[in-house]
Image (cartoon, rainbow, N blue to C red; front, top):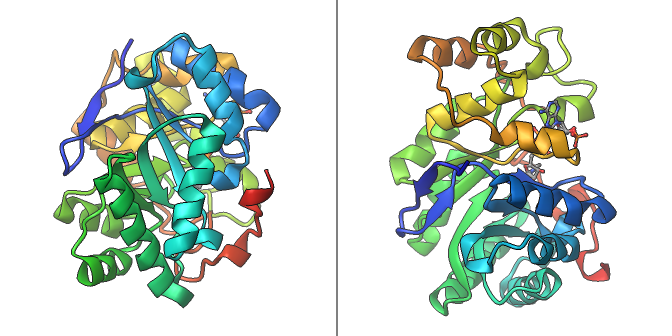
Amino acid sequence: MTSEMITFNNGVEIPALGLGVFLTPPDQTAAAVSTAIQAGYRLIDTAAAYLNERAVGEGIRNSGVSRDELFVTTKLWPGQYGHDGARHGFEGSLTRLGLDYIDLFLLHWPVPSDFAATVEAYQTMEELRAQGRIRAIGVCNFLPHHLHELQERTGLVPALNQIELNPFYTQPDTVAANAERGIVTQAWAPIGGTYARNPNAVTHGVGTPLEHPVITGLAAKYGKTAAQVVIRWHLDHGFSAIPKSVHAERIVENFDVFDFSLTAAEIAQIDALDTGVRAGGDPETFSADSYPTDVDAQ
Ligand SMILES: NC(=O)c1ccc[n+]([C@@H]2O[C@H](COP(=O)([O-])OP(=O)(O)OC[C@H]3O[C@@H](n4cnc5c(N)ncnc54)[C@H](OP(=O)(O)O)[C@@H]3O)[C@@H](O)[C@H]2O)c1
């Protein structure tokens, strides 16, 4: 099984489906990554702030698949924004991963209280891309006005915007703003990982999207699991998605989605589950202090 591919606005291709490793403990990360690659995954999504880049590199080296067949994403933490911080952050990620280039390097969050440093970091990433050290650059958690402001100040259009996106939080305005600019939308918390982490999240009275009767009903119809139906919904929308699991059987399950697709009516039924309320962090107020993390200490 191989993933469907999506082409960026700079011509680089990214596998639509990958493995995320946020909250994957470092001592379980190498096994999760090599299990995923052996199951057919070619996209791995980590970040300096996940404190597991070394183990991601180890999993890649253990996988038996050559580096040039893989697509590795990592992210610059807001504590390292600005020109010098971004250079330092990039070199740190590269060293910890044990790689000599990054496929996709992302700003982890906008920092509205110091957007000048956010912009400077992005310009530095563009310099690194032009030098051939990164194949594509992008952002995470950018709202339409952040995309507009970045483009106004730099003339640059990100390849990808990774945002919180699942059936309970579909962000239609940001998805549309991405599409207008030719930016690929990539879903984090694609199967609703945020709902288990946030007891105040709005969930239609069920635990997560995987428990909603619309999803479980479609799972029964297709002989698939709820997670597979939700992942298929992302792919049928043209989104990239990066579900996380530490369990080998779920890693394999989440990739077994290339033998069915949803009808337009079923996609619309899932779209209608949007609550309009995010369960994760707020891009309007985010800063490095939101989740204090010493990325250099790892
Ligand atoms: N850019 C950002 O700001 C940002 C923020 C958050 C996340 N991310 C990225 O997005 C990735 C995915 O997001 P996420 O980890 O928050 O949430 P997620 O992938 O939606 O959900 C992960 C949760 O679902 C469970 N799970 C996985 N497969 C399952 C299955 N088949 N059936 C039932 N449960 C299943 C996992 O448990 P087990 O591990 O126990 O299986 C874990 O608790 C992250 O790992 C990270 O790479 C980016």
